[in-house]
Length: 218
Length: 206
Picture 1 (cartoon, chains in turn green, yellow):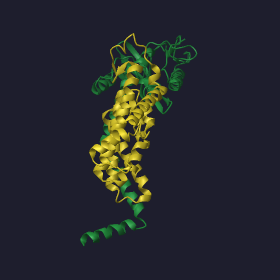
Picture 2: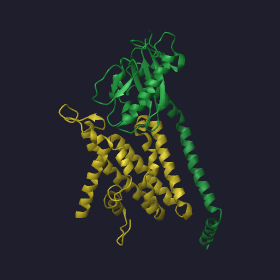
Picture 3: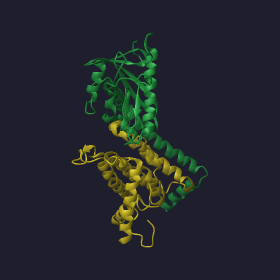
Picture 4: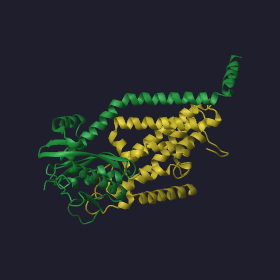
């Protein structure tokens, strides 16, 4: 009897005109609440992960050996000890070999924004390295720009006279300022090349009169 | 799940999810991520784990809600539940495995649009009790996973000479010229085509 009464109450509730809207509201409220709670719980950790990824990229771009196995604490300590803010959004890094200017860059990649850091020697003649810390390129193809195999040729790269950096097809003969790209990731490489050159030219424009536009002293 | 001799029980669900009604070579669903993430075995493993978790838990939740969900808004509710579980996976990866989160890029988020998840929600979870819905989701997730791994292992091994990122004897050496095409999108189509042909011809024989 009681069961039948309960079923009648539930059926009346479900038959109401406003039930679908109210039900959707409750389900949305519960799901959104749970997700907001989880996001708040992990917010600090996610922010710290992003910060460490950026710090690691700055050190790698400056030519320091900071592998993926280096602990976050070590990366943060190195960054705090060696890096200071410089003009034009650049960071000045005291490396074991001397000094490097780390230039954070960002721009539109094939799928989403690519963020990274490119390092330049104080004279502006050569790069000290390049590292990407945020991207959403195709896994296995464009996403290979984060790998050492792609990054390492940027260390010590002498900048080109017209275009500072060119990313050429794999196997092509290389001239000054040129590195090999990733097979099957032409779009990502083209866009990264554009982003890098824009940032390097911006740096050149910020230099004192007498520079050649790429941060190099005449 | 249809047919006059509809079987019940865990074994029947396992056979359907893994073999006779396999999501990849049986239903030909979830092909986008099958093609996209299978050039690395580690990425594939994480993707499979994320999909199996989302599929089983969303099926369980949708089944628990099925008697209360009005029929005309059921697909909105199913999408909301699936999206919530996918966002949970995404947040956990960002917080505890940031390298993998960066490596998989947009594909974790795209589980929401994976036809397998919505397909199982509609075909099974919305009309079956929670235990059966959960197992159906789990076995479909495992069925998807085993085909993806069969596609991923040769792609990474022959295309890059590594497995789980570790260089393999002979394949990482100077005597092996990597089959780069296998790592590229056409390689995924070749491998998937071979896998579907193989399993379908086996199914027809049995």
